[in-house]
Length: 239
Image (spheres, rainbow, N blue to C red):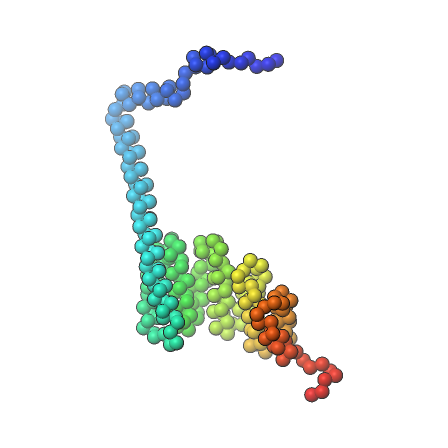
């Protein structure tokens, strides 16, 4: 059985919900002026607090960004020097540590931790540099697509510390990540680490894997020469 259609005239006779609630609200305000005033004040205060927090947070983000850019500019100047002065590195480290401690919840604060690691690396304080980089593994930077960058610096620091086995594990992880911008460098670094460890067989295998994946690499000729030098001579070749 078809449903009965409601005519336009009948619809117009039905009470408007908006007008009904508006009327009820006005009635409540007339009957309870004090409570209504108090509620209005609360609403205004909430709005003002929200706006205040927004502008405060915006000001913090702007300030943290300005401080970080100033520190990065100074870092770039010092890092390109042939022999950075110890005092300069200490000042840079203090600047980045201040930003990281003052703005820990902001992106600038996390970036400051990264640069603190870079400064410590320049100072050859590799254990503390490693701590800074590892601290970022659970950061928003890592979640926003910079995990490979963090892993690269961790691997690089293990390598500087001569922790070769740990460095291989990190670079192997980067090599297996097809989206990593450090993938090609990771394969080459693994082979060079095996050379440092005097593991010629593993080094040759890594170099061959490198050429298999990156046959047109700009250093392909160099890699082939390393394979030839590291490979054992054929039994039929004269000594």
